[in-house]
Length: 178
Image (cartoon, rainbow, N blue to C red; front, side, top):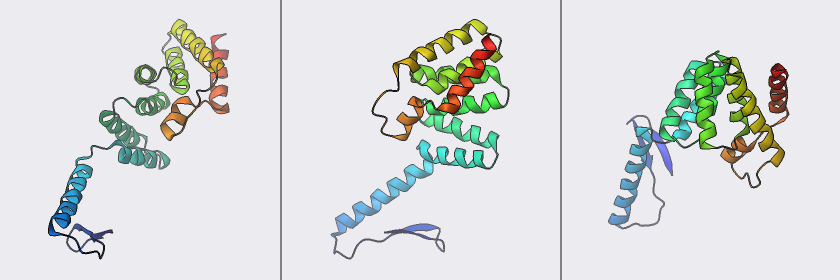
């Protein structure tokens, strides 16, 4: 049982009523100290994700971008973080930054359709029409293969997902090619 002790500025770990040896109780206390130290150092990206989503829902896009960047530093092989940052860069009209971040997401997860679509749109906005068309063609090729099976967690669903809204955005982009 854990509970905050605001009067002392601490967290209290209550051990079950089973009698423990002194060594066991000391080991539990050491574990709690190590866990608190780890969390205070901020070495876990998940809290940054939560803060980024909250900032987005409250309209604080710059703050969300800082949290996504911090999460990306903590988990550099996670393709979702650069993709999220690329989305924010596109919304702000920072096409080069959006293209670079989307390219990073694609490099990490080549089958990430939303990142490919975002990269194609950024390339188009930057006037790099042939590259945008090539990225769009590769995206169409991947979509024709169908979604990969076994998307069991949020990360896998995010990097493999491509819904009707995504398809409509891709159609609008491809209409601009004409």
